[in-house]
Length: 258
Ligand code: NAD
Image (cartoon, rainbow, N blue to C red; front, side, top):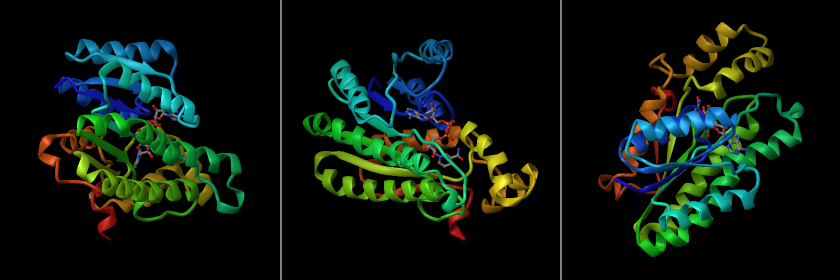
């Protein structure tokens, strides 16, 4: 479709699946995130050779507002606007509140919440000028409900749902929709890393973390697949979704129905 799609944190996991789905739909994609140069080149080449899309990489660190703004400015300078902005970059840290490192709190709030403010702030003027745009914020089931030992993550994800609603109201008359996707547990590097940490924090085995903590929350007893989230992002970016704004779609196997 040849739109310009920016996906933050797309060198891995959910963001990579979203960038891949948009590229395969014919959109040009700006990917972003950390990784070794060879790995990033491999991702970019794969996106281009398996689709008609152009793929660009920008190394903005989502904790640095000037770099975040430069990512959007680069995309706008290349394509005139950002048609679809997917705020996906995120990290996790699992620790008791009283032991939670202050630096981790600041980092999680910056990446999981403030970076979406900075990308939107930079992208909105061009979207308004074109009279269209789509913002998709990757929140979490933890934007709706809490779990212990995830203070910063839960706070940031609740915050991004508030930002989603506010932006949707402000932009409703400009052809711009703003929505969130709230996934349950998806087996990506982010989740793989927290299995040993959760085991330590709760004093249980890693197998128990998977069965008694993670999949216990999900009535389907299955991890969500990255492709399922990407398909929902594609739908939210479609014309058919033009009246969907200021809301979230849960993809959590029934977790937050309880
Ligand atoms: P992941 O670890 O596989 O990928 C995270 C991406 O963010 C990577 O590309 C990484 O390089 C990038 N990133 C991290 N810090 C960054 C920074 N400072 N600047 C730029 N990029 C940075 O994780 P994931 O599971 O794919 O998570 C993606 C999003 O989905 C996150 O917002 C996460 O909170 C959310 N989410 C994940 C799950 C899950 O179970 N995996 C569930 C709900 C929501």
